[in-house]
Length: 194
Image (cartoon, rainbow, N blue to C red; front, side, top):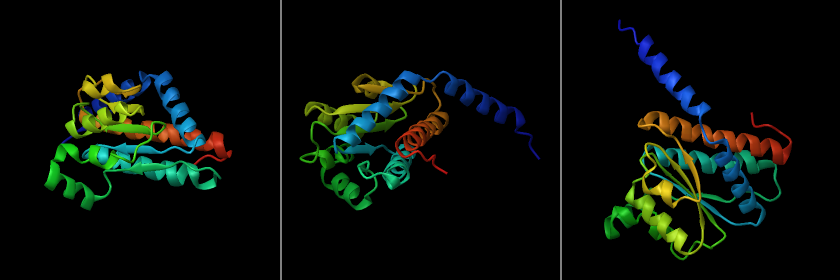
């Protein structure tokens, strides 16, 4: 039997260290932007690839159900990586780099917000969608790791995990989602999420 104790300890210590160093002002800014978006009845579009796609779907669930359940005016999150038929049709006909951008065309309004998730910050399909959204005046919350890539530069609010480790980056992106939804739920409804 192998003893993985040292590797487990190193992983967890690294994650704890990164969490302690997160930009709390950026998290606060993202929460305020999401809340302003809800208040004006605008939409939030969230997306990513792979593990980031899973985080995007989780985020849609947490805000549309978890936070919104007891609110009269609800969040309007849309996870655009969730419809596999649409993604496959666009990828097949127009290229994988268009799978998010094409879904946003003629749908976005300038008061809508994009939450773009890319561990590397370099995913071309994410970047194309973000560039399109910026061209019509949408604000961007970018969730990245590594050096942040181009997504960090394009983001109005950057939730950045400064580490060259995709697993810890994805862990922390999900933690950021939970931090934001838990606090907003408590503030808006008076009830913490259970």
